[in-house]
Length: 578
Ligand code: ARG
Picture (cartoon, rainbow, N blue to C red):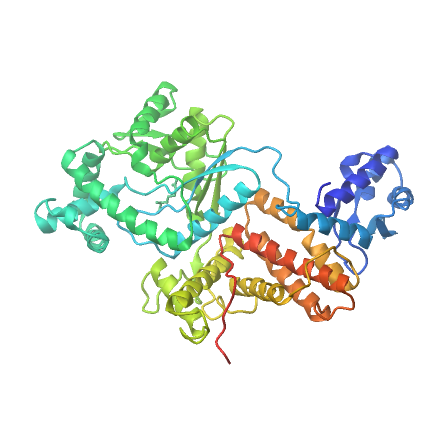
């Protein structure tokens, strides 16, 4: 039995449609917009009216008459021009919930076409500290990774390190400028390297010759100059190590730590292939591919710059080829700032022209920026770039304010409190990021994002911890068969049964905010249930067991939802005594 209530009803409807010789394609329900009137609504009769040459009310009435025979419906009515309103019998609800509680996937379906996805997210760069923009790519990417895997797809995540562009030459040039040569490079740590990069950035902005030198060094590095390569290896390693620590803390997992540089050899193949196919041309010393302009200007793609170096775009094109040939990707998803939309449009178009990714879905999920209260990109208090570490610190400080001191609660010393602070702080940051529509960007809610009430990560973590405590205190009463005895239980049950659909919708739309919304309303629905339906003092033991089962299911489902958002659910939540 499918455990999605919608699917169960659709199947019943399809049977009736078939028996009436109506096209079963229209035998679909949606959750009712008017929960006071019905649980589900089917608008199929309206869609069929034309082809059937009948009044939609008449069709709906025919369907309703057949459905009346099915004891799983408690109420069937035809309303307005021909809407079919359906309510479900409590027995069916209870039966589905029992089955959900017994299933380790809570009745969640899997995709019908499991395939292999390469997920490109993270996108950090050598010598640059992660900033608030990188948070989005890591948070969204990790959530999508977990959702796709849960839905039955295979995912290989690749951080795609930015390690091959002009910044490399800029840093090397700066070190040479200050030290005279590269002999000391291997003694430099991430702070030194970042400082060199910052200086190089300023210098190259002011000084054309410095810029030119950096460009030439980059081309030399790419062409294999051994001294440059050796120094660059060190810059890369130190940067990867630093960034790994950040991602570990954020619990963003990457299967591969490849970078733009890994595509170097394949770039040459791409250039050759483009020439063979006759799609490239040499323009002012550079090798380019012109693209057709449809409704907006589309600049040509540069494969090789006039100095012989490879540009950002060709590394991405070559990387597609590698992901298809070596990793056998059937879909490649890029979680990258939406300001790079044009870049991906161009890259995907060239991939198509060159035929390097036949039947492979190429998808750019472009996210908007994280803004400060002024609506401009989020900055530190003194106006600097908000680094990821600053942000984590800000979040932890905020959470710590509402925590008891180490030693105040039994079993919670400094270490335990700090672990909890970190779980809550990261949950708060990630939930705030993922509750917003990906493309639209959002204003960082400095005062509210870590609150224990409202639409926040900690609110949901708190709901889970509260149910844990209910289950601990239940003593001899064990979760048992579900009985629907009042409206709040019924609402909660109907909400829980949306799970499979919600996850499938999120997977299809690649929009974790659907899960965030659902987790929030589920936690709220649980609250209303718990306020009206006592567990320990329920009228009967059976009812107590049933309510405990509902509570446990809510806890397990919320834990799964947080997991899919990349957020941990601590067993216990602490709050400072008021
Ligand atoms: N490192 C790049 C940047 O900071 C982002 C990389 C995104 N991924 C890609 N395949 N281009 O802009």
